[in-house]
Image 1: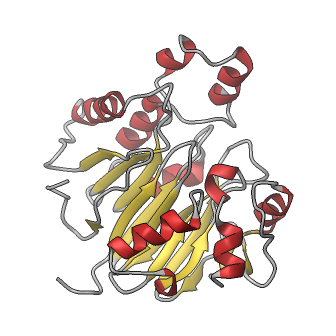
Image 2: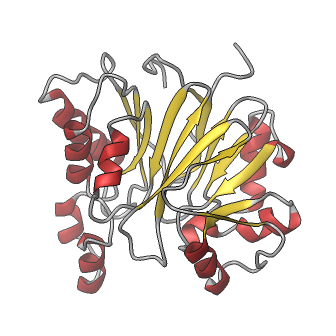
Length: 277
């Protein structure tokens, strides 16, 4: 196996914390850092990596479950923190970030591609009730990876990038009936269901079915709610929608619901569909 093979691993995905690794077996980036720096380091060491192998952190938005460790990683470990000016301003105001970003702050702009250690990265806007929210499209080792973790109302950019991505991390936050019949107060249910809230299993499935293309290989469902979703339900809804138009799990695509707190396996990203989880 080549050390330059593109790999992906989810460290955590959900309202308790989000963090993802993308790169190779020698270096890479993190997308979000919503779990502790100690937990991130532990997960990296399991892969034979450490903080010195991380070239930067891409931040999707300024909610605590996505930025908990950015201050530590940026100012104590000296890893550059990349995000938009508005999201950096939101991080500054977030009381959950004890160590404020100073020397590690890096500004990027939506829609303006940039390069980071051999990765070509494009940022696009997402509808969510944070200061600003973005997704990322990353070209690494000949593979196009896309991530959109907190999605309210789908937009043109999200759909356009789905149509070009080989490997996709996409929110499937809740089952609408579980949410409506669940314990959350009315205001919170309305927030989640709003155009700036979170994406349901059904919306996620419809997006994938409508924007499927022959180059789509692996789909990772992220940010599942503990109270209002179930990995099996989310997976079945997406797989059933895809199979309803002849897109078969295990033949045409691999679909996996990421665990909220348990790290995923290390996935190799190439032209093949993942066949073993």
